[in-house]
Length: 163
Image (cartoon, rainbow, N blue to C red):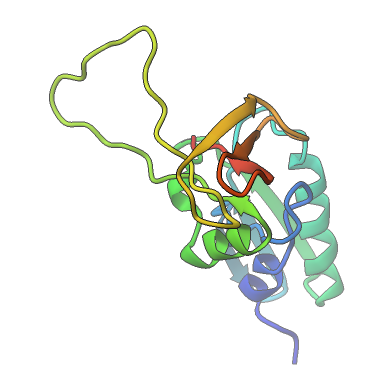
């Protein structure tokens, strides 16, 4: 008996953050199965994500290898991906790997004051938990991560940016 299409698709690792799956990140939005046909729908973390082609190819490869004869991978850009879609398990895996998971998006109701230099919320160190950290670079190995350093344990770490 072949595994369920959702389980197969959900197990695909993110090529840029292989410690988490496309399901952990909330990139995998839907998997529809009709007999031997499967349609998986994904939403990239941003529209220019360079990993999109690799994610699509790996989803197709794993679904075909699992015995699904017709596989279609759709890309849905609306609504846009948000870091709020990262599962609790995904956040746990990121932190366990030494990556600070993105903070929950701040939602506002009513008017929002506009400032030219908005204060950034503190990013906690994934190693020691200290909030005394400093951003050292806006970008890391990928555009979706920034580099930080902890002022207490002095360890550098990456922060997965919120969107």
